[in-house]
Amino acid sequence: MIIPIDKLISYQDNVYQLTTAAIKRAIQINLAGDEELEKNKGKVVSTALKQILNEKVKYHIDS
Image (tube, rainbow, N blue to C red; front, side):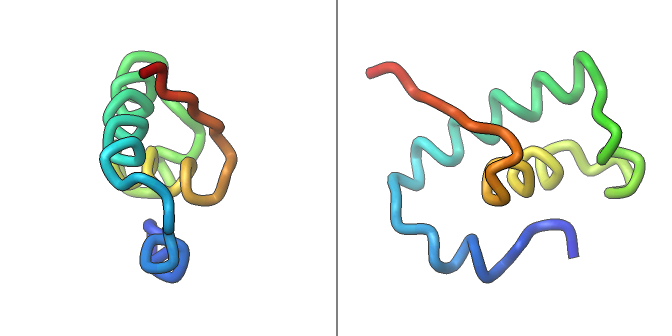
C-alpha cells in the first residue's frame, strides 16, 4: 500500500495544510523526479503524501 492509512487516520493536525504540502511536494516530484516514484508505479500524489506522513519530507506553511 502506498499511503500509510494508519498514519492518515491518526493525523491530528490541519488537513488543509497537509493537502497543501502534498500538492507542493507532488509538483516537486513531478519536476525533479524521485527514487520512490518508480516503486509506486508513477503515482505522484500518493508518493508525496506518503513522504509527508512518514516524515521523510518536512513542510512549513507560511501564514
